[in-house]
Length: 158
Image (cartoon, rainbow, N blue to C red; front, side):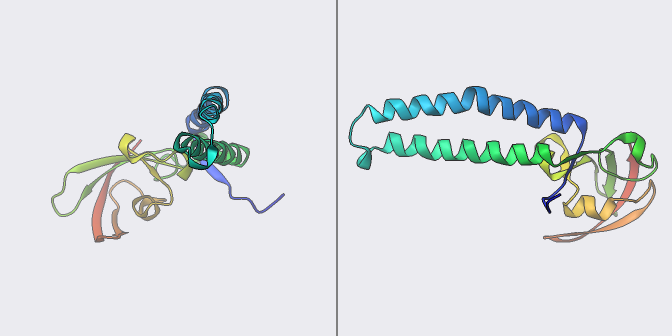
């Protein structure tokens, strides 16, 4: 086995990546090839911005396909049954309050491949998640963030 990075993720995270890969291969790739054909028909490729743009998009799409294929190939599915129900771990949603008098916040801790802060999913590599992994309800945690220290108390783990 090579020394490739392992991508811990939930089953739904892997399925989402598989859907994105299918979309890129079956739809997006064909759209980009068609854009390249059309741009070629405009003639001189040396000053053809449509062609350059289409080739850049093609490079992005092919790069993303390669990245997703690697993530899927090296995925390690995290099963809820493998984890202690009382501890913050991958796949769990943790609710906490910032001390002394902050509002409640909740995040689901996922692998870096499926992190999406706008959906409340943070990477297990993020400062918040790293500080909370292995902690329990009621624990007070100091989170080191780029903006400085943040003191929080874990309220619930689901």
